Length: 354
Image (tube, rainbow, N blue to C red; front, side, top):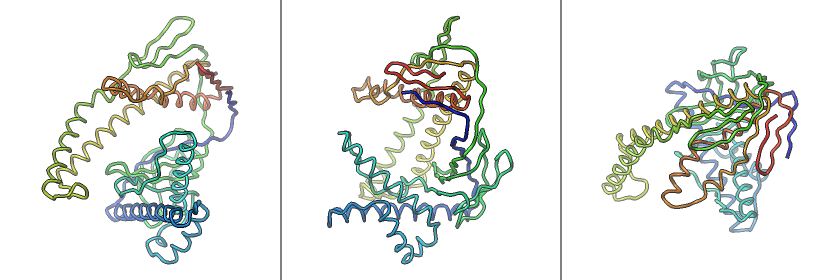
């Protein structure tokens, strides 16, 4: 398969962190709760329609139902209509993925009802309808106007400014973010060297050129934090067992302040590892694209590499996922596109960026 790249507009995401006031925080939490309620109600309607009438409801049918629901519910009518359609579209995509996995003989994974703590956020389709980003020319920091929340202070900036198209509001731990899709024309410098790259675990990558080889060390971000993560997980397990025993309930037991703090600490540690990995992958991929005009890559199948196994295999899988070879190759391809490389060719055993 060969993909030609040409100069022009592409879509890139920029993430801004939100800094809401106490009142805005309450409004954000309220909207997340309503969108979670909408997801669960729409899922319940689909399941009922199939069990009672063998009718498969689609996105269009549920959008019509949404109009009726908004006329009957103050909760739904108080939110932006397009953002509610995005929630219904995400449910529709979940069903499409379910049927695709069934057709391929994979583990289906039927769409589930979501408790609030597993519902991360919602989205908007069109800039100016329910949301508006107000920044300077470099799109650095500024405010984000959200329907029902007003202007929220945000910090962040894209590598290449562009035109805002869509927006996702996401809660991670106790922090709120806006992931904004931009139409932009990124430009990146490229080098003159040619070589091949072998991704691995002992060393993150080995780069071979006509003048020799270079190795890039594997930072093993998760390994450096794994002991702390396991300690917090053990603490959480003890506190949960104590809460279950005291309340006599295995589900829906009360969460103490100390248990909640332990949850927050676990999220903080995982966020730290994810940020370290993200920064490392971007830095290495940017440096390689800046040095090379053509780079051959070995084709990877992370799913096959991380197939289930014993205790030793679980440790190996952890290392493979921590090194994030698939994400690394994807970043190389995206940055090659920004550097206006002529083509990306993928074969059974190699992938060329040139």
